[in-house]
Length: 164
Image 1 (cartoon, rainbow, N blue to C red):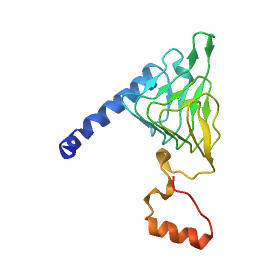
Image 2 (image 1 turned 60 degrees about the vertical axis):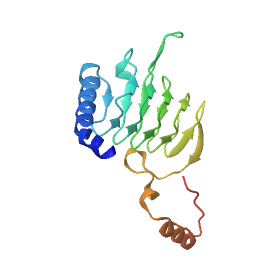
Image 3 (image 1 turned 45 degrees about the horizontal axis):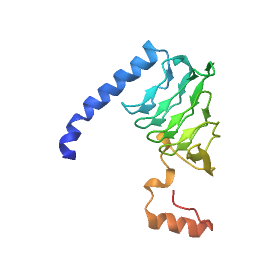
Image 4 (image 1 turned 120 degrees about the vertical axis):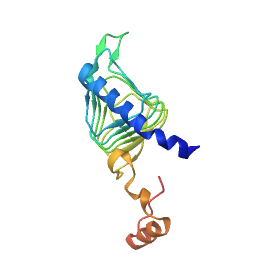
């Protein structure tokens, strides 16, 4: 089944590019060309110029990025930094700034600013871990290192880094 679905990756890529141009050119959203997002992401069109997504960031499926609060009459900029990953079904509220190299857990409701190089999750989102190292699209730098090699490096340096 997966093999047959791989035949349609070109179609997904085409649709994502079309949606990117729709958001940036028609609505005026500030999304970096290297940022990637799911087709089901929901970006607030009430104040579209308030959405900023940094380079090499990934926004997963069913994420809602909001820029307005109709009940209070607020219109705020919502910013996602560089090299971030926003987990599935998360909600980013108006006026929130997520720093560079952050990972936001699935289903999180981000109500306050998140500093750079952090993992945050929950409702409301709280910082779980700080000073993390991630690469493009919020991927952990040690994710591709074999377990034995990682353990040897930890013994050598005298650190005990938990698996993330």
